[in-house]
Image (cartoon, rainbow, N blue to C red; front, side):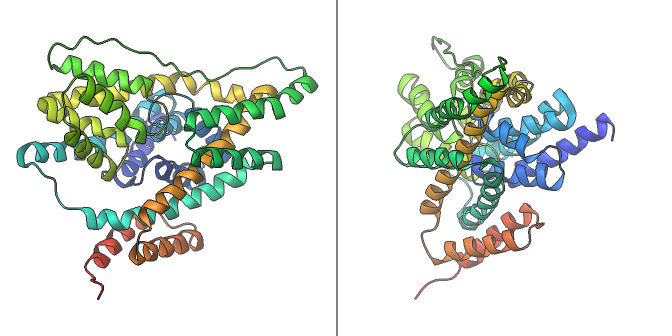
Length: 381
């Protein structure tokens, strides 16, 4: 297959995922694992795990950055940009349309019944990925202990980045140092996230200022997109006064129930602040740093795996990433599985996912949406 065909393949896959990827970063990564590792075999499950672990340590939306890694693995640096852009595009367009409706009419279409069914169905997709990635990451009982510690830390409120870095440090001492002493391997490279702070003097709203504000947020946003609300509240509500808290909550809600990255919230906010130009400026600003970070990180990951010392760090980071996925899934389950309808959709989705292992995730998402709508019509007496 030539380069042009590979780029078309990358574009088609990640555009499709951008349309159906509901459920947040854990669900997005689960869908990518199914498509890229299981179905298309673009990379090994071990390398996919390495990329997931390393991506957790740099700023930006993790699942969006994973699309860029996958695109790079298939079609080089051009694939990186094509994959990221195609994954982001559907969410940005849909969020932009909803932003226009919000500005014009003060409300958005009622699509909650469909989302009601999608959320429990997505749990099945995440569980499938956790099972497959967990089997690969759990290489020994020591890593199992580290994984349990990370899950416990997550429920105790420890920041996911601190939990993953802590796991990496334990792995470095537990596995890496003994291996290094045996092999006398001095090659050791740490993935470095570049976190900075831009100082903005806000004297009025312009597209340039919008771009710079969201560029700063995109450059320092560690962890999943769910922590975005804290950054936006601090910058746009408390510091700049561009939005009210209610407008911010509406924007976050839009980002949550549209497919693709939750950072498409920036598109919605940009439209509220400055129309179409503002939407484009905010979107470009918040996603641009991710392309840069991934471009720097991708070549480093194989070198980490080849170093005896760094491999211990990476193994621990990988099991920690799976642990974080487990903790997130449990929390999502608590929030989503609130009545018999949600339980029914979740159980059916899990049975189908684990019984018919080749079923496309598209059908799980669409089936959950349809069943959610139908069940929402049933009234309990």
